Every structure is written in C-alpha cells, then in structure tokens.
Length: 224
Image 1 (cartoon, rainbow, N blue to C red):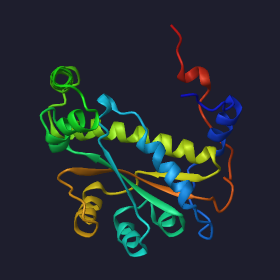
Image 2 (image 1 turned 90 degrees about the vertical axis):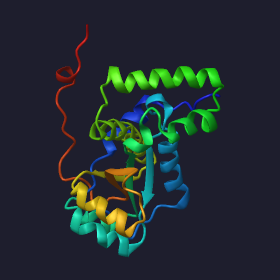
Image 3 (image 1 turned 45 degrees about the vertical axis):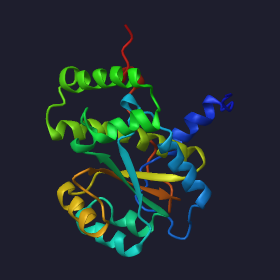
Image 4 (image 1 turned 120 degrees about the horizontal axis):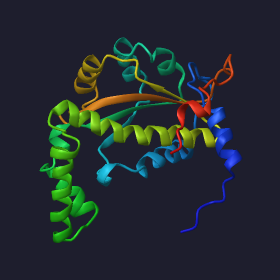
C-alpha cells in the first residue's frame, strides 16, 4: 500500500495551526464525513501489544453535555460551542490483566493468532505486566491503559488540524465525580472503563491572541 505524498511543510503547518481552542463557533458544524475521518485515525492508532484498550463516546445530546458541566471545570465553554465532544475512555484492570477474557478475545478473534502464537504472546504480556513495568495495582494498569488512549488523542487532533478543524484536549474534570455521571447517566460500565480525557472539535470562534510558544528545540532534544 502506497502512502500519500504529503509535504513536510504541510504537516508542520498543521501543527502550527493547531491550538487548544477555548471557544468554538457554535454555528459551524463538522460534517459526518469529517468526524468519521477523525475517529478513524483513533481507530487505526497504535497501542502497546496492539490491544486497543480504549473506547470513544461522542456526546452530541445537549442534556448529557449539561450533566458534564458540574464535574468538568475545564469544559463548559467547549460543551456549549463545540461541534463534537468526545470522551476518551480507557480500560481498567478487569479488562486488560494478562489473563482477562478481553485479551484472549483480541488475540484469538481480532488478531486471529494461531494457538502457539497466543501462548507466546500471553507469556510476553504477562512478563511485561508483572516484571518489566511492574503493573501490579489497578491504578498502574489504568494509567498504562490511558497512555495508549493518549496516542489516539494525539492522532485525532493532528488529523483534524490537517483538514483545518480545531480541537481542545481537556483534563479539567473531577475524575471520580465524572465517572459517577458516566455510570449513572451514560450507561457506561465504570468497573471496566475509566475517563482519561475529554476532547472538543469544531471551528474556532477567533484566532489565538498570542503566537504559539515552545521551548527551544535544543532544550528538548539530546543527541548521543
């Protein structure tokens, strides 16, 4: 499969264009095609062992958006104005422990690995959890799962910027209270999934007041 010949300049321009949009133009809505494209980049994102420990909830219902406001101090303006609002959920320990049914499902049904490969993969994954990364608590397992979900978040925001769509990642929420709302009002099994982030997509109401600022390139890269 050949990849499209996208110029480096176009890619960097997309990164320059992207900023954490605080308020969107509520009159401008994304097409079904565009939001599907953005979500497909999450769908195709890489994850550790390829186990895809994520789920994405697109919240378009106004009443449900209102329920998120009291538990997400960083989200009200986005909930009111964003074309699309996405919750990034990550799997908790019961779903991603090395001996979980979901893990066997991924190896057997999704990846369709032969029995000997499943045995080898299972051994590597168990050693990774128990020895290499010492993922020996439920919190550590969820934090590891969240790391994978953030890869999908980055890809969604970059893909959106490349087609001229704005976004804002949001961690300004009370996790325990937010998950209580998700369990009570959204029908989400919070024993299996936790909330890692919220993300808003749409078109900016106005350009950023200040140019993008970053540390000097040489301050963040060391060559050896």
